[in-house]
Length: 270
Image (cartoon, rainbow, N blue to C red; front, side, top):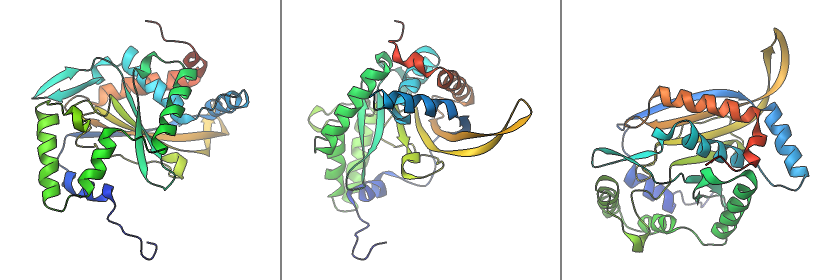
């Protein structure tokens, strides 16, 4: 730790209030993907002037996967019942200029093409980095300033009202659908190979998806050893909604789409 650097950031204070010893229903999974051709595709689009990254690609693939392949994952739990979401919204983690993390929501992400997704995400990131954070992110800062143990009591009250009872608090930007359908984070952009995410207790998302770092590895293709770019993806899913079958269906959809990323340039069929 750097001398004089205070570890008690707003986020760490919030985390101390909301996380407990692992007891929630979670399913973890990971897989390796050959993204050699996908990286070439991204490089080609960037040369053409379209600033896209793996984050854009996976945000769209996951969103369309919920629309076309695994709609039963686009749900959340309220008062013991599984509630279908009215739309597919992607919550994407971003890195701020000071090194902290924030997030932006892409609403109706499943209806966008790659160009629209790039434009929407760029606009949201610019606004957030300029200080226009969502009310949920502002609430995080507020909770971080509340002294312990009142901080924990305050968080538990919010969680009880919004997540368990489905009460919306518009003035605070809080509801049981604040974080969209899923959360996507690209830890490969900060040099990590892979990771297993936590299920943010007040997010009410069905799953959190992690993109790792793509690295050259020897693989066997047609009984020959070749060098390919391999990336590890991982996910944590809410076991009240999802199980391994849902994860398998989504993974197969991902593999299909990364072989034909040009499909993302078109608007999805209604």
